[in-house]
Length: 492
Ligand code: ADP
Image (cartoon, rainbow, N blue to C red; front, side, top):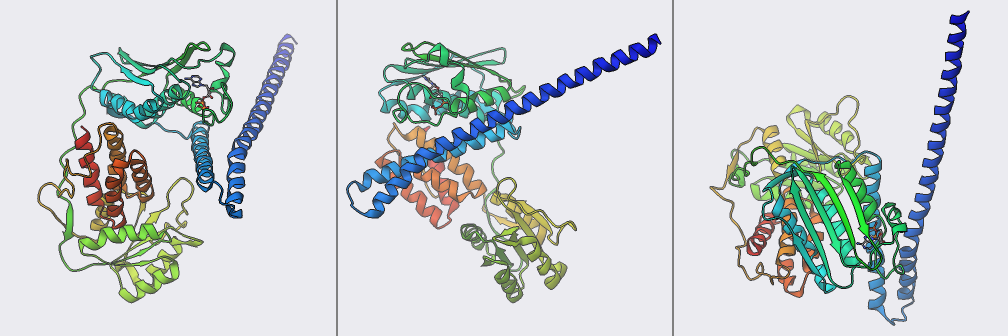
């Protein structure tokens, strides 16, 4: 009896415990739901005001009373920029929340990384008459392990905020490094933060201090910064008082590589052509810019290239020229690239090599058919041209002809266009480093944005931006990379 009673009691206890845990789960789900509703309401609210401005000013322009066209255009551009920041921030937040944000671990040159970061923000500080100071110990490790993109994002958010909320004095980035623990303090002499606001400013869309519009922003920066710091396993702290400035401190473990990473091996001479008979390639892609870019890359190497922007013309051109290779996008507008591959295979047999190019971004790719599809292989977009060459050589069993030694640089350091005023040279160099990276993956739209950013730095940058644009327009990516490299050499 006693045994049965204790079993029953235990059973009762367990039932109560599971009821309590169910209740807790229900409360948590309800709280999460409420938080989501609040969040969505804030998003809608944040979108509405810039959208209203765009809508209103566009109608004014349409009416054509022509009063202040430039002013209206400026408001529209600012509102669009605000919306673009908002979208970027929301994507970051959703990545963090969904656990989809992965960190890279790279050996970065620590002192150089910090100096570049300051160079990027220097103009912003100068335009407000503020001193921007990097305070660092004499001895810092040459290399540390970090995700450079995310660490940069954290520090830029904090320093940019410090500049934004400071009207007189200085902003200091103070860096310390001891026993693999890096401490970054961003100290300003700005408006400060009241103790009652110290917590909530880290929540999405929470903004305090001054009327909206006076200091632009969307209120996502600190939420993203805090989330990133936590993902990196670190902590963030705030010390501040109204009128006495603020100090945001981030502490992160940044280990040092045991041995300094080896410098990249010197590049083999650039590919200039191939051995053997002439090869025919058909490109099928609904993105005209991508077609032009790949064609502009392959033709100078001696390929005969034909392009098609939909399935029907792709199949017709292939029937006409009997190519050696077809490069086909998996998403052709409303059509499915895998179906095109199957038809090509049926008509041309195994001798035709088919390489599928998959769409950019998560979730935009049409999955291959269950059978695995008719293609020979698959490349993810955006891809590095060198990777495309590897795939082509592999599929067609070809051998490349390479230029002897270093690739020819179409622009030399010290060239009139690449020598920029000292004040903008470091920032232009940072944009150029990004352009070099983008050239390697052939991301045309992002390159255009970087060139626009260079053009916006100062009137003196206009000739450089112009040369870069014309190199990009003619898909002379080698010339573009040469210019980007020369600017960095000049700035060093
Ligand atoms: P945003 O800067 O877009 O408004 P953030 O999330 O980066 O959004 O910051 C939230 C709020 O925190 C800001 O609106 C401001 O009120 C406050 N804040 C952030 N940094 C500072 C700072 N250095 N000095 C004073 N207030 C700050």
